[in-house]
Length: 106
Image 1 (cartoon, one colour):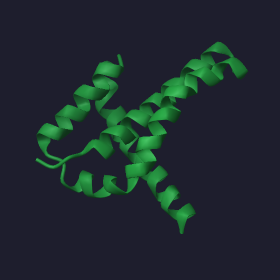
Image 2: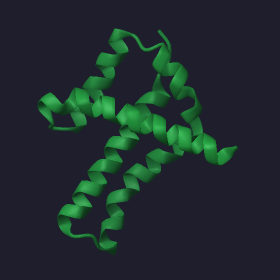
Image 3: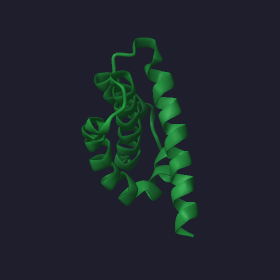
Image 4: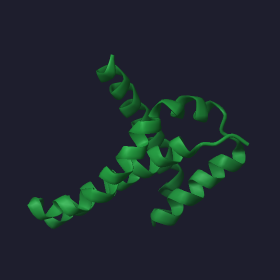
């Protein structure tokens, strides 16, 4: 079974960032909302350190690993039927972030 931690961290980062944005917007954006972004920014350190592993990890994901991703995201969200779509969208967004990251490094 191959390791897919970079993919898990990327999904966690995207989900945490979206949750921080949702919470901040709901409260009415102010400087105090910076605290909402601490957790996603701490996750970003590991995400960008290993982001180049994500495409190959995605190619090799097993059904069990996909279920593990689903379970991990479902535990952090109370989105019910939307959880699968959130994972898919998070992967899409994460891969776009990877493409932009690669582009800026070149």
